[in-house]
Length: 468
Image (cartoon, rainbow, N blue to C red):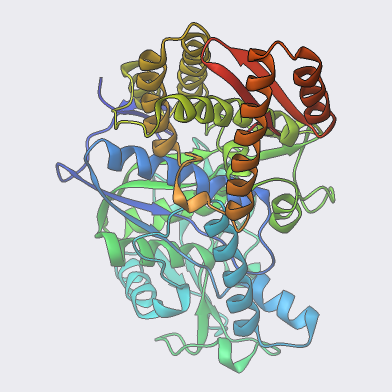
């Protein structure tokens, strides 16, 4: 079965066929570094990390470019409102926060992470091509603004299946110099009150780029004028991605062959948004559970669906992940080091089906269930084989608890606890062998009071503490 992806432009599942066999070029819209990262940012970056990992597992060489929008109205406005640092200092500080949050969740660094401020020459070149082709115009009021002429491009609206007349007016610039309300800014002339440091020379005077032109320039600069996949959050589909597609195609570029959009995050049944005041920031979430559990939670839904964060979501994710950890611990104690294995066919089928993570996780938990049953019956070999497949699947998903990437400073404490428990279980086993059941029961009760559960199996006693 080939990999199939849901193309937002075609509104259909399509077999994935890259432009160059064996190689994939993927561009993902990264953050506008105006403020601290929230859960929606993490979810989006994680989705494309999962896709990248799967494509890599299937033998593709993936070039992932994820940009940083470090010059934008919101960055300038927030820096001005704060009044204590330059806009570029705010952008740099917020970028560091995003990187730290991504790293904690095991989101692999992109192949390259360009900043918008480093690609202004490429942006200007695209704008010049658009003007030459009759698809863009400088404002007639000498403001230095340049707009995309939506009426000149008959395909405008094709990504979101809208007619221009029915679209909202573009709110990214003063409308005074526009021919039509839907025309959007490619270049913004320097205005009174703008920082001098937020200006670049251009044929239309000093100014700065519009938001949409930034991604058209950065994606094609590093991936070529035609590339395979363009990804981002559903909230970017319009107007950002619609405008990217229009200006890039009108400039003569083949641009993205597949458009992917991940779903948003809902908190308590409501879409997460600043206006509702229900944003969950990364720092708040990362305090509530181990990073690997949070990665499991944020990556457990089908990527196009809404991810619901309710009061018990973290506890449910923790309990589910502890089932996996508990199974692997049992197997390793009985069988030792696990052999390497490939992912099962059912897992591959699920991942190839538009990255169906819920179906893929169902395969994981079916093997955990059957592996535990095998251990209970004394079939260690079968359990070890199934555990190896579980580890292979978890590696693909980036949530393998045995991976050194998830090791913490508590590892020495864990080793000491393992040693202590081995001695206590040996003492309990000796008491049972001597028919000293009172001592054996007393040990069990005291351990239970400390939150440690003892499970007697044909292969001996096993213990668990918080799912270990």
